Image (cartoon, rainbow, N blue to C red; front, side):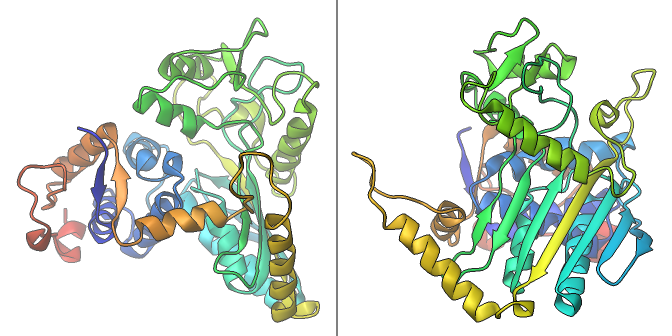
Length: 387
């Protein structure tokens, strides 16, 4: 089974009902689905449907992620807050925390919320976009299970630690810079393993200091076993600036732990002292800056747009057709997919069917012989919640 396009409404309804079926309240399930599918809409397939079952559903089943999210405010001031997510749904925690930071910024100019004891919150760009859509500059970051080595090291000591910034502009897309501080991330290696693509040279280092190449599935096993690690932006050593990626990664690690007295490094590996699985206890931070507390949203958007267009209109390298700015490619992918749906590979197709059958949901998908788009049925909310 090759990749098959699944309509947005069908996959959205299914993912939401599946989350509800595993105990997530419907309102929270809708948030989780929106964050998850936003990744696929932007072409970031490593964080969309590709991770629906193994990262969220399987963790709920294993008891290391709580389907019902307790969002506890430990301390709050007019411009700041510290939140404990009690290992609930990371997307729900992320949306609530980012909106809290935005609300504070709207009133006082700046707002920041630090979170501890959370779970994987999906693409960080979702939260930066929440800010830009409300006229704010938004920033967020999260630590993650240790899989990245420091410069001159070979042991995974911290996570892929994305540092994400969104700035509103007057264009059809805002400036959304969303990337890991490692060259690649675990989700990408997982995705390569699913589609049988080799790892890219220089992205993984072994305990002997040499690059790991070849089969992505084998590389992923080595990372999980602690015998290999991802490399920071700039790659192995200092020659191409690997220390810069290392420095940015440490900024995220610090801001994801020190303000909220959260877990860090090896304590985020999801294992207790006896090797048993446990919650990951991730930390996040969210920052919002309201542009209307400066010279105004209109001025900000206009100036940002001018700068972005100036960059894109600059002299191009020989053979290059375009210069892009952050958020542009993702916007174009969305326009390409808007009227069609999400491409789903064979491995994820099987996972979706397994979840459907386990919950006895009444869905038929495009990769099945009996799929009829107009006649696709779905269970009602009440019947799902009574499972």
